[in-house]
Amino acid sequence: MEETKETKKTGFFATLNNPDSMLHKLMTYGVAIVIITLCIFITPGRDALNPAWGWLITAFLLYYALLSKRILETLIFGCAIGVALTYGTDFINGIAETTFSTMEMEDFVWIVLMCGLLNVFNKLLSRAGSMDSFAKFIMKYAKSEKQVRVFSWLLQWPLFFDDYMTIAVGGSILTPIYDQKHMPREDCAFIVHTLAEPLRVLLPITSWTAFMAGLFESGGLTDASGSGVTSFFKTIPYSFYAWVSIIGCLLFCLGVIPKIGPIKHPDPSNYLPLDTEEDNDAKKHGNFVDFFLPLAGMIITAKFFAWDIVPTLLVVLPCMCAYYMVRGIITTKDIEGCLIDGFGDFMYLDILFVVSYALGGIFESTGYIDYLVSIAQNTVNPALLPVMLFVVFCCSEAAMSLNWSLMLIAFPVVLPLAQGIGANVYLTAAAVISAGCFGCHLCYVCDYTSMTGQVCGVQPAYHASTCVPYALIFGAVTAILYLIGGFVL
Image (cartoon, rainbow, N blue to C red):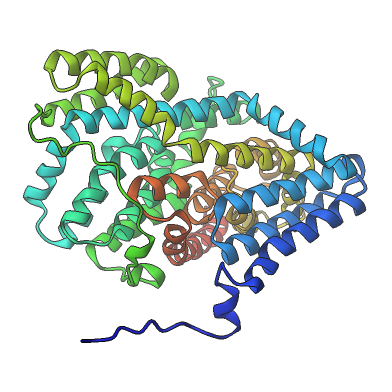
């Protein structure tokens, strides 16, 4: 009889990384409580607060996320530090006011509805068996691991019109295939996550287009017709991080770029159980058409709603349910289950969104983002402005991915700044957009990270660690391109 002995790692760093050790608890919970307490009693208050204090929150987020690997805790404590800095001894009321004001935000309500409705859409596809038909199609033609990865890369393109759709539907289809092929889920999650934001940025027929067009118009950078859409189109060739990550991901799928870091050593202990809806072989299953018809309907309908996914889903979901019921592949009980499970599965993300939006609001109200922009304003060489902005905003986005909020706050300053010093305005704007893409890819506390981990069945923090080496490489290449572009373009 063979005796199996479990070897336990010892030493300072092993103890520090052990969540059950007293040292780990002191260096996470203890440090967080001490910082919050000090901020409550030493802060001068919101009106007198120097925006540079935002670096304290940024540094804490990086420290706590990397040490604890617990994303929700990181955001909660980061938000608490922000509230302590702005409200001081009125900390408890500050928490309440911040929570209420965040949950009343239109953007917050939109993203909660969007995630819930999108997950209902995803579950209906799954419950009808149509996802299974598409998975079988991939299984039929993708024999090797390289072929499966390339199919994974290709699959994301039809889902480009919404980044969350790319993650939710793409991840749900692909993860069971990776399990059946005995391939690591880490590869699947990395591919799905890497492509989500770049596809939305580069393919100009999404809600992102309308959003960016509005920013260009408000910043006074439009074409002769007064439209900001053309101005946004001019940034697409210069969105270097999006291009680099899409090409880099394809090279990863082909095996040209090797596996680096944690993804090189798959760890099934970090896998999460998957939702299996298609185990009942007795029921009638949907076919290939039943998978693509709702997607086609989604794209067509989205065009009428300016690519706003929420009203689109409010129209598509009832039609989808009616069609599937006529086809006899779902029942009213299935629909009810999809509605309940679709919103219920995202309760964790809903909580994450509350603290994430609250923290973004704190950064904005304290003037931290304006402070970062002011640092960039000191750059007098127009050729260096794009790379400087990219690097500066990458640092902040790595800690807290603001993305759309970053554009809203930075563009009104960045566009006039670029025009004023004679820099290439479109290259400069694209540098800020690329920094947002970088944050979506690398940030441990980004909603993309949590959503990808949940859909692909991988612990979010562990999944984030597999993306870091590639995000840093893609970011370094992008920085070089902006450095060259600043002098050439």
